[in-house]
Length: 535
Image 1 (cartoon, rainbow, N blue to C red):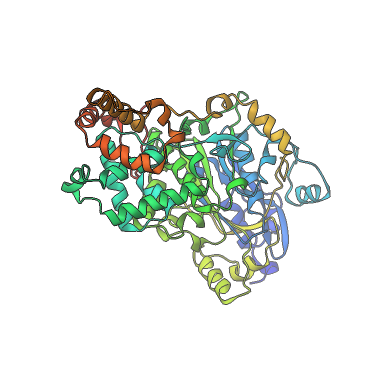
Image 2: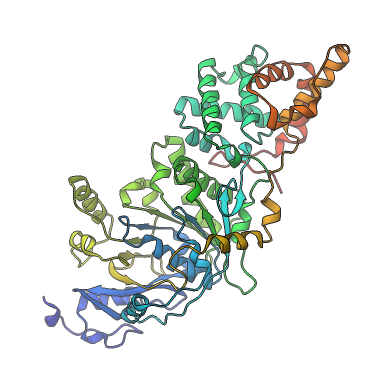
């Protein structure tokens, strides 16, 4: 049946002139005619025409049912994130965005009207008004423009650290034993040198027996872990681990005017370290899961977390890592957090995770090669049945157009809708670096996280006690003051020799028992192996 032969149908509420539209269009329009609060994505595309009477939307309560924004490079994924983030902020929902290329910072500044913006707004019947949104800017380890984000080794945990260090399954399991030992002894691992010290001890003559009852730690595996740590530090990774540790509750702030704060993690300075930043994003999400209370179904999300370059997270991931991601995504919805994965094709996301992503915005795909064509066919199969020829539509979409299906207010999938998306109202590009630095320095969070703190941790406590024991048993022997063995001056040889002596001593065992009593009970780990002390 052609469009002209389609019988008239009752117009859905809010769709003017709908009886003149073909039956499939009316059915699509009815599927998006929500009565409650929603985000406006754009207008329906049908038979080569943009139909502004049919608005495509996402119900606000469904944003914590997770989603996927996908598409080839240059098809407009970043602008889609910006559009969704703006509307979430306007409705009081905090947002987290990872800015891999450095072009998302413009969300803090009003957009600039031009012919393209006016044309797009007219096509989709958008009342476009330039607006900036409240933002906080962060940078991993302070590398780049932003408030430094750091994590302690203890809270990062063995599963995520194994991903960063690219350890295999056996090595990951051994690292888990090392963390287990440190947790039991109350030895908090603040930075990489603390971890190296414990690994060195556990392979020494004095320390080998400590793990004997639970499998032990082979010298070969320990050597691989130590070499990986050394290589990791040599690449300049040390600043990411330490204190003050970032409190992920900062991501859930609402500005004084009631708008949700948009937290932008600036990643251009570390975009050549994808294993690191993608795993750090997962730490942020896992830490939120660990700390947030259960809230069940809510009228609007407590936070929406956009996970950019998601394929990097899943590349070469261990089974334990993938299982932890799947479980975290499945359960974090009940804590009011929505997660959107951003990547090129749905096949970049494991099936168990993809099945939990109820909201889909698929930009154009390319089909230049046999692999591209295979990916295209796989993508089409992930959508509900549709009156569109999706293989044709997905290769013909223009920039700023996408195929959409979301969850309705009742939780059912909406009809597939090719959509011309609205234009963001904030600046579509980066803000000036000087303005960005000013915004960072004026933030009330800057003073809390700007300067790294090297407080006394397990390594310093152990070496100080050993120095006291050595001084009392051999007062005539020269000894180096404990203060001169600060973290910044501990060499690899000192790590090995001092820790082997100290941790095997009676003084250490007494101290470890004491620490275990006072602190160890407070170290609990989530399903992802992350840990967080009670604040």
